[in-house]
Figure: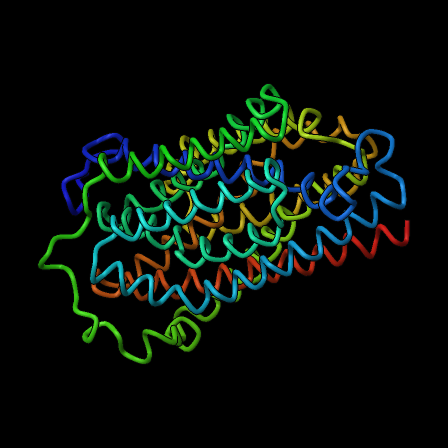
Length: 394
């Protein structure tokens, strides 16, 4: 079935460059996330990491982890608030200037942030510079642009599968983590992250077409209605109210678990990137297979509501496994369940986008992104506090 702009599949005109761009940005983010727990623990401990090997149980490690996790989560929350405010304006700019220019600007900002993180390691500059730049990157709302570009080029029937593929492309730990464990040093990983960010800028600039025509673009005055800029429609509209509550809860839990996962494994098992790499590799393969090959068949067999419920069930099961396994190697069982634990997200996105016309997609996607990123900031704050609390209580 052809999409609105004649795209018949994930590899037709413009799509390969789009997927490459998404994967490069996601891979860079994964590398940053893997290295980041080691930088605050060293930064707040006079330049040395107190959590290596058996020292993970030391008071110095606990203090550095606590401070690093707390400060990082506070900046994440601040970034989420900025995204909540910026999302409607980014969506407006996408409607006025086009999707591609906003995507390029966001990726340039991401490249600058990655270079600042490299400078923390090489030049010893303050880690707070990276935290501040990460807020700027978040404010460009890359996911808003990705979802709008896909929605422009697909039909309603295609969107669940394409949104699931986007989720898989943005979850590339199965490729990046083993690579990070091979390159070994933090500096080499950060250099690779910077190169991937640069490649994303190049691929987007020279390989991706614009998804809307000049006639489809709207003037700022026509788009800048108060209701659009304040994003009240999603909260007030009765047909979205129940869906929004589900999204707020599930996204908070998902973001919170993800934010403390590496810190938890480092504190509870003394695990580093090399230890976690095989587990994340298998989890990533599971996620990739489910999102790319399974979701489209689930969409035919179940209602969208059924896909959401299935995702919630396996998400809860994954949390229980992580919480109660007695040994680190027992976490390998997640390879069987992790992929099904995230399928609720593309299904929720598809419901939102299929419920409105083309002229309202930017507004709705901006509103959805505002709420998702706000809860994506609240989740890490809540879960990091819980992690510290339970560490203090042994």
